[in-house]
Image (cartoon, rainbow, N blue to C red; front, side):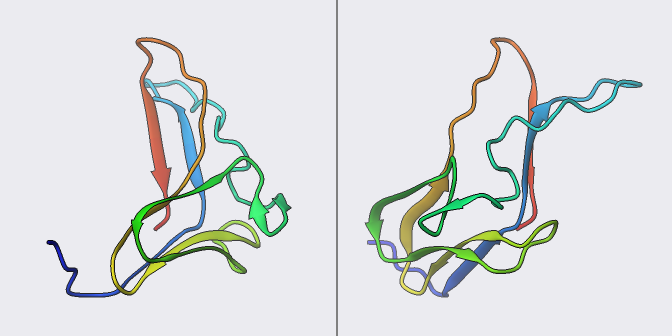
Length: 102
């Protein structure tokens, strides 16, 4: 069984998912819902889902962000298969670029 040797805390402060840039063209609009996690309902970012498969950990919204007031935080002292996720519509045969501050 895998045992992590260290605690992990990860904070995602903003995300961007847009079509790939071609030389001389402007970047496409961000297609992620609530990409800076500013809109909250019941303390969770609108359009984002918590997932827990196994292990222990904490999924929360941090009160400081890179471009706004919030960030997503994933913390696990014992190791855990947990995540924040969202779903976006994409086009077949298109290129997309996902970037985030971690």
